[in-house]
Image (cartoon, one colour):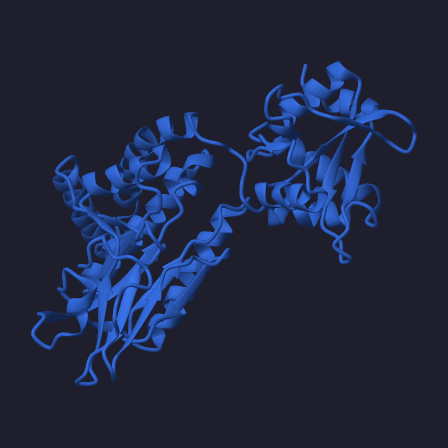
Length: 372
C-alpha cells in the first residue's frame, strides 16, 4: 500500500512503463472499470435524492459485475517507485473501491438506512463472490469523515482516505514485464474492535434467516443494525451543515414552477415545507448581514439558493468578494424569518441561457407558509 508521502510529478516512470492515478470523484453516482481490472464506485456529491443515488450506484455496480469480476494484481509496494520493480511482492485480489461521501450520512434523518444498504451489500459480496470492499472516505480529520471512518472500523471494515497531495485513490502501473499492477494510495485506517464480533454474528444470523425464509427474524436483525447505525450517526447530523452540494429534486420543481401553472407552484411550496435539506443564502463575511432586493412589485425579497453549487456559481458570476456562502437554513425557519421581516423569497433556478432566474414567493404567501 502506497504511503501518503508521494508528491505529484516527482515519480520517474521507467522506459516501457506507465503510471496512472485515479481519484477525482464525479458529481453523480458512477462506476468505472479501471485499467488492471479494478472497479471504482463513487457516490458523487451530496444531493437531495440520496435514496435514488444509492439505488443508481448499486445498479451500476451490478451491471459492471455482469461483465466480469474485478480481478486485479495488487502490489504490496510501500513507495511509488517500487511499483515498477519485479521484485515487489504482489497478490491476486477481487475488489471494488467504494468512494463514499461522508456528508451524505450527516444530512439525512434516514442516513442509517442508507449506510445499512451499503453494509449489507459489502457483506453479501464478500460471502457470495469473495469480493473485497475497499472503502475510501475523504477528509478523515473532518467531523464527518472521522466519524464515518470510526464507525466503519468498529463494524470490521477498514477504510482509507485519498492521497492528500493530489486526491489519488488508486495507482495503476504497467511494469517492464508488461504486467499491470494496482496499488492503493492514501492513508489506511484499519478496523477497530468496537462492535466487530456483534456485527459479524448479526450478519451471519441474517444470512441464515434469509436462507430459511424467516422474514420476521430478518426484519428484527435489520432493525437492530439500523438502530446501532442511527445511534452512531446522530451526533454527526447534529453538528453538520445540512445543505446539499447539488439539489436535482428541488431544481426540477423550480424549473417547472414558472410554466407549470398552479399545480406546479403548489408542488414546489409543499416540497419546501417538508424539505429536510437546508437552503443556502449569501451574507457579508464580517457582519453576516443579508442583502434584500426589490421585487417587481417593490416588495423586499431575499435571494435564496437550492444548494451550495448554485450559490458558488452566483458568487462567481457576480465577482463579489464581499459575500460569503453561509447556508444551512431549514426552509421552514427561512419562511418564519422572512415573515417577521415582511419579505418575500426569490429562489434561484437553472436557465438554458446561464442567466440567473428566480422563482418569487411573495411576502403574503411567505406569511401563510410560516410555521406558527
